[in-house]
Length: 194
Image 1: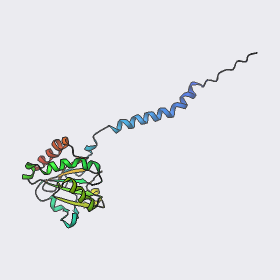
Image 2 (image 1 turned 90 degrees about the vertical axis):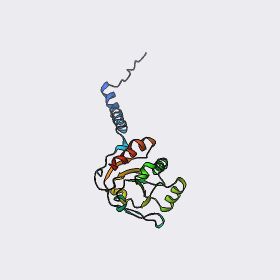
Image 3 (image 1 turned 120 degrees about the horizontal axis):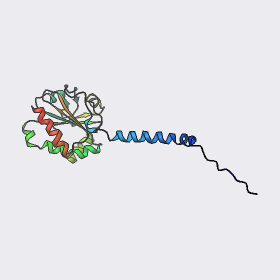
C-alpha cells in the first residue's frame, strides 16, 4: 500500500508577499546608491558668495597677530584656507598651498593666504607647519569652531577667495589638487582681481 503525499507548494501570492520586503529593500538601496554619485561634493553652494565675509577675530599662534576682518579688507585678494593638523586631506593639499604661496605672479599682486586652524591646538599647528612649511601670512585659531559655523564650513579642508573689499567670491569644498589649483583657485583669484 503506497500512500501518495501531496507536495505542499506555496501559492504564487504567498511567494510574492514573502519576497516583497526584499524587493522594496533592493529598490531603496539602488536609489540611495544612485544618489551617492550624483553631483560634485566640492560644488556645495554657499549662501555667502557675493556677500561680505563674516566677521573674524581669531587669536594667532604664540602671541602673533591673529586673523581679523581688517586682513580681509586690506585691498588685496585673500585666500582663506580652513584646515586642521588632524585632517588627512589637509596634509595632501598642503603642497599646493605651498606652491600657491611661492607663485611669483600672485606674490607681486599682493595675494595673501590666511589659515584658519579649526578645532586644533596651537602646539599641533606649530608642529604641522614646522614639518611641512608655512604658506600662510597669518594663522587664526578657531578652537571653538565659531568662525567655521559663521563661514558655513561643512568640513575641512575648505578654501575661500575674498576680494580686497572683503566680499566672498568663491568657495572650494575639499582639498586643493593640482587640477583645482589651476582651473579653480588661480582662476578665481584672477577673477577677484578684476
